[in-house]
Length: 141
Image 1 (spheres, helix red, strand yellow):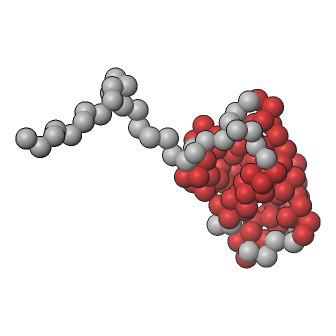
Image 2 (cartoon, rainbow, N blue to C red; image 1 turned 90 degrees about the vertical axis):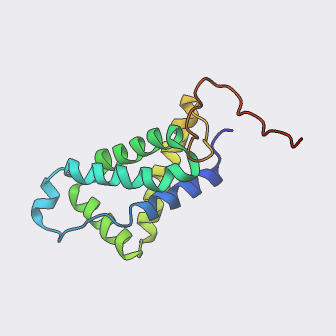
């Protein structure tokens, strides 16, 4: 199944809620000149995965979260990133930030479509030993 606008919206909301616990700091002039620290991006990636995998599976979520965090890194200054983090933490996202997050979600889901990655159905079950079917229960005698 290919991604739809419904999935894009659902993913955007999952990203918003999974990143809502992002740490934030006071804005400063230094933030405008400083790249987003890798440890914060790594933390956001983990939160993205934690929020996404139960519903869509790791095979879907890894490239989706990689793309989302990559777009934050490419497009946002540290100051804008901190502002986004504050908004998400307070659950008070401006219409402009909602639009930005929606565009990132749409871009990243389109990238997955372009690459032929299909939506998963949640956490993948552990592999079986040899692919053998489970044995049937014994019938009563």
